Every structure is written in structure tokens, then in C-alpha cells.
Image 1: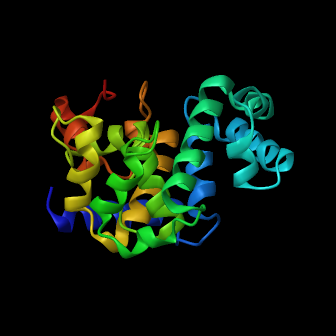
Image 2 (image 1 turned 180 degrees about the vertical axis):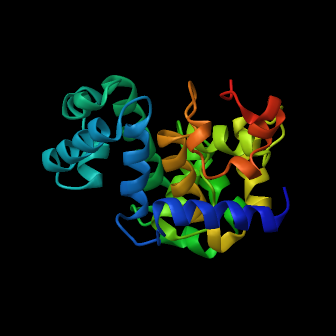
Length: 226
């Protein structure tokens, strides 16, 4: 797909779901910790776990100094408490060791790939988590690719069918204009949840029908996408 088609996709999604603009909700450390908590659970559960974590400690330093079991007890509503607690403690400890504190604002002065690689050196931090920190906390053009973004992009033909999730981050960043990355991320997730579902996608109700490679490869576009 060319840039013009990406613009068409965004125009249709904005018309369907409304325009969404970036606004700062949390700082980099908060986004990092909450993204760790969000793995393999619902937004509601991870949100509750994050609130309980903040209510139980007096700052990031206290969490870094706490025992893994103590952290796990606070975040149990988010699932996989012991595993996530270990990563949270390790991440905070390593950031403090490197920086002497918890201020990650300096990442905004770095090229996206360099900033993402800095974060990926932290324990348990992968490309998606690092990209979430850069996009949501620092307004950098890093595109996190979750299962919804990956599925929608593949069906639209924005990604080769053989592309991995890991490669998808950079591949999509090449075709989605930097100023549109936030909106593309948010709207494709919403579309993936409501219409372009993994099973039984609602193709007949999809505003992207005419642009969708998968839909148009089917005979007459009369069936759902497998």
C-alpha cells in the first residue's frame, strides 16, 4: 500500500470512530510499569493493579526497594503477579542504577530507534512495550503493534503475510506518516476489537472493504476473513 492509501484508511476510520488526539496522561515510568501490567490481561484488570500498586507505595524508589512478593501481592488482580512483580522490580532497579533516578524524559531527545533500543535493554522490555512508552508518554513516532494492529494491518495488505510482529513495528513506521502514528495505533485497535476480529470478522459492516486486500481476495468478498 502507498501513503495515499494509508491516508484513505485513516480518513475512513476517523469518520467511523471519530478523531483522536494525543494528550499526556502519564509519564514514561508510569507507562512502562502499566504496560508490563497489561500483558496477558484486560485493560480493566491491569488498571486496577496499577492503581493498587501506586496506593501501596510512596514512589518508584519504594517499589524498587520492595520484595517481589510484596509487589506481587499488590498487583494480583492483573494476573501473573509474581512474574510481573519481578520484572517491575528489575526494571526500576536497573533504571535507577543507570540514571540515579527515574527521569526518562531524555529519551525524547534521541532518535526513535536509539530510544527504543535503550528501553529494550531493560529486563523484560520488548519492542511493543518500549514503543508504548515512547508514543504515549513522550509523543515520539514509535508504533506499538499489538494483536489488533497486526491483524488489521496484515488484512489490509500493509504488511506482508510473512512479516513477524517484531518486524511489523518498523515496517509500519515506514508507511504510516509520523504525525499519524498515534491515531493509526488507536483507531486500528478499536477497529480490530469491534469489526476486524480474529474470529468471525464483521466484513459486511467494515468501512475498509474496498481497501482491504484480504476481503477482496475472497470470491466476490462474500465470506469472512479466516
